[in-house]
Length: 152
Length: 154
Ligand code: HEM
Ligand code: HEM
Image 1 (cartoon, rainbow over the protein chains, first blue to last red):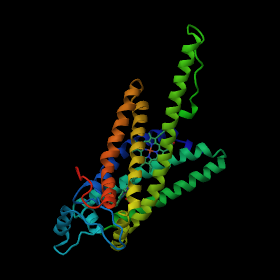
Image 2 (tube, rainbow over the protein chains, first blue to last red; image 1 turned 60 degrees about the vertical axis):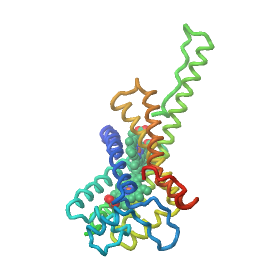
Image 3 (tube, rainbow over the protein chains, first blue to last red; image 1 turned 180 degrees about the vertical axis):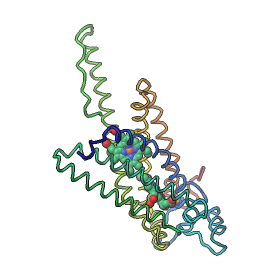
Image 4 (spheres, rainbow over the protein chains, first blue to last red; image 1 turned 135 degrees about the horizontal axis):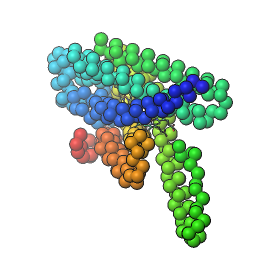
C-alpha cells in the first residue's frame, strides 16, 4: 500500500528525524522555559483570571529595548522579541517551520506504524493512512501560516 | 521489533536442567524489559502526537496578541504546570529510548547495550530533574508560599 512503497527509506528517515528532534526539542525547551530574556513560560503559577505572568527583568528590558520604553512585557511581546526581530526573525521562523515539518513527519509516520499494527484490514489501513496524512498536511499549513505571519 | 522476539529453547546438550532453567528465565526477563520499554515508547510517541496536534492548533493564537496572552497565561495554571512536567517526562523517555534504538541498530552498538541502557537511564533522570525543576519550583511556590522553594539555577 501507499506506505510500503518506500518502506526502507521512510524507516531510515524516521530514525534521522528522531535524531534531529533531540536537538530541536532541546532548543525549543531552552527558549520556552529557561532563557531569562525570551522564555514564554515563567517559573510561576498564575491562578487569577486575566492575570498575566510576571516576567524577569531581562525580559522587561529586552521588550523595552526592542519595542520602545512604553512596551509591556506581555507573553506576546516576549515571544515577539524573536519572531518580530528584523534580523533573527527569519532564522527563528525558519527553525520553527523546519521543526514543524520534522515533528509532523516523525509523529505521523510513527502513528501510521502503530495503526498498521492494529488495523488488519487493507482498506481500513488505507483510510487511516489517508486520513492521518491529511490531518498532518492541514497542521503543516496552519502551523506555517501562524508562525510566518506572527508579528509581521 | 520486540513483539516478534521468541524465546530460544534452552540448549539440550552440555547443560544440566538447573542452568538451562536459569538461562531461560534470564532470557524471559530480558524480553519483558524490552517489551515494556517498547510499549512505553509507543505510548509516549502517540501521546506526543496528540500534544503536537493540540499545540499547533493552539498556536494559531500567534496571529492575535490578546488570544496569545490568554493562551500563555493559561499555560501558567497549576494543572498545566503538572501537565508540563508530564510532557517533559514523556519527551525525555521517548527521546532517550529512541536514541538508544538508533545507536543500536544504526551504529551497531549492540555489544555495548547494557552500559548504554544504564547511561541513558541516568541521563533521562538528569533531564527530568533539571528540566522539570521550573515546573516543580512554580508549583511549590504556589502551594507553600513565596520563598519556600530554593530557586537553585533558575
Ligand atoms: C526527541 C527525539 C525523538 C527521538 C530520538 C525519537 C525516536 C524514535 C524512534 C527511533 C522510533 C522508532 C521506534 C521503533 O522503530 O521501534 C520512534 C517512534 C515513534 N515516535 Fe519518536 N522520537 C522522538 C520524538 C518524537 C516526537 C516529538 C513524537 C511526536 C510528535 C514522536 C512520535 C513517535 C511515534 C508515534 C512513534 C511510533 C511508535 C511505535 O511505532 O511504536 N517521537 N521515535
Ligand atoms: C510546555 C511546553 C511547550 C511550550 C510552552 C511551547 C511553546 C511554544 C511556542 C510559544 C511556540 C511558538 C513559536 C515560538 O515561540 O518560536 C511553539 C512552537 C512550536 N512547538 Fe512548542 N512548546 C512546548 C512544547 C513542545 C513540544 C513537546 C513539541 C513537540 C512535540 C513542540 C513543538 C512545536 C513546534 C513544531 C512548533 C512550531 C509550530 C509552528 O511552526 O507553527 N512544542 N511552541
